[in-house]
Figure 1 (cartoon, rainbow, N blue to C red):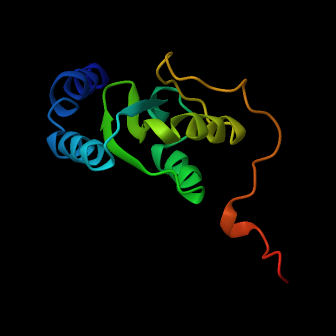
Figure 2 (figure 1 turned 90 degrees about the horizontal axis):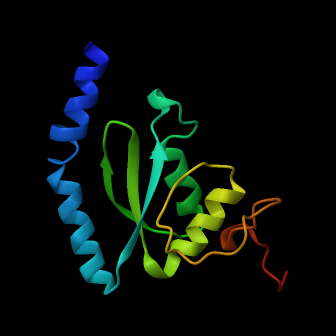
Length: 127
């Protein structure tokens, strides 16, 4: 009973009333002068395997900026600007993080293999 009550509160009250993050998302889109793509991660308490913090940590290592966080009873959300969305999806695939996003997002085939090196991890070619 308590679990269903919390799910209902998350779905219909707490999630939609997360106004600060919603406004921040709108301001970021206006600042960037582009739209955004929403990424969804299944909540750990609902069977997901990765937290939003871990996913954002992977993306921030490659300078992919996330904003506009949100949640509901089943998922945690964040947004990425349109220009970085396909790259962000590939990085999350490389890292083995399960997510869902817009079916309109044009992407390469599912990424496989080792994570690419971040720019800051590459050695200076001048020695």
